[in-house]
Amino acid sequence: VDTLKVIHQLCDLYIVTAFRLCCGNGPSERLALGVDPVPDYTALVSARPESAGRSRSSGSTSGLMGFGRRKPVAPKPPPVVSPNVEAEICAPVVSEHSSLTPLRDFLGRGQASLEGIVKLDRIELWLPDPSFANDDQIDE
Image (cartoon, rainbow, N blue to C red; front, side, top):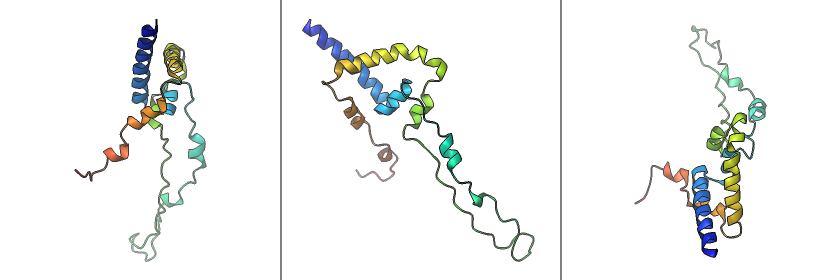
């Protein structure tokens, strides 16, 4: 019976670890399973000030058919990007939530059986830093 329990926990560990590695981190995993709702960014986007610099100066100071000096254009604010953007893109829509219930239950049971034995948040440390992968200057 003890051997069966160990084999069961090894299978849980493999599946839960593989899913966490695919998702990247705990919050992304919860988004992909539909446990947490996808944040609504419309409030953030509408709260951003409209850039007055988008409308360019139509008149010129010298009157040479619009080829005079123009007013400087204000820089655009940086885009609003979530650290979990990939999981938010892949998050299930409302009609898919019921079909994810067995998967959610299965992974939840696996995580519960490993609680106190394995720290799943440590799995995130196995993933390479994406900024390192994009670095052109790698010392060998």
